[in-house]
Image 1 (cartoon, helix red, strand yellow):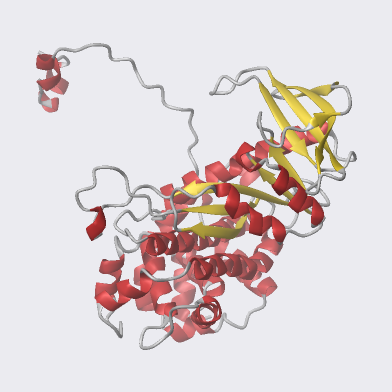
Image 2 (image 1 turned 90 degrees about the horizontal axis):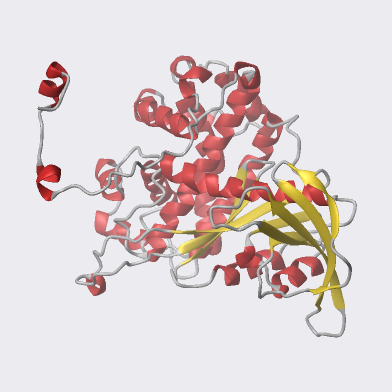
Length: 456
């Protein structure tokens, strides 16, 4: 290992691991190949797509506040900033999906040795949790939007998360902020594989989705709605037992096949909650095509894993710059979100390497994605200046297993206590009651209040 690189590995190990992870997930040569393969309307002239990805990755990681700032600092940018924005604004959703999907495929064999020994969510099944993520309203900088007082939505995405690998494995970007997420699920289920279990909320619980996955040999676990697919009960509701949150019941139900000539038998799992949800719901009904060998209490507990993807979206926005409101063009906003997802996967690999190198359970430490990303921001830029590009090239030929060992060796230099998560309960907003305008407009000098011990 290069002497300067070795010193950074000892003093700034998280930044070194981030560079190695990004190098494996979105190497320049591979990124350009993805662009050539999946782009239908754009082509490469002076500006390589890998340069665009490099600049946008700096923004996603929070190393630069905006694409304009990143481009202004890029002394070797071969085109004008206007030309850069023109390319970013026209990147097709298929390219974004290929970056996320391919990046996850490149990281998965590196992640596997680091998570060795972690119990699977459901033995014998590859779990896929699916959920939608709507980008927030963008600033109204585009000419047709100026003067519009409402919200301009730049699009949304359907995200697929593998809880056992800890990676976002797929992403379906959609430019239309008002389009239904259900329509985005169809191509994913049409390509599903035997042995996969797809978990989703009630939005995705449709007859078409269930039948599509079943035809491919995959199983589903969806929360049932009151309208669709409206299954027909064929057996009595049986009490199975109790889990931590309530009592579990099971019932056999059926739905008609696509041609209506036959029926598909499903299992309805009911969880009668001890405590109502925040929406005052007391019963959660689930529909699944899992075989009877998977017991109802296991299924009820398994559905709770769906909330991990909700937490993922929160960590993604807290740790990374995934929602850039200044990017008004839908394709630009979706590219930024897609690259933030790739960066999030890299941070997940870093966390896995730290967990593999240290006994976090014994130390009662949970690593915070926010603090990992903050560590990267502190040291990354200076590291790239100090270390020659040739020093990083030596890691290109490492096998996934060897790279995993390298990451684990670098992670041994991390002090996990500096990355500790500090979980707390939800803040309770105090009820302030009515106050007069005069009281609200009044101000005091804090130093005087502290000196006197009271507000005079």
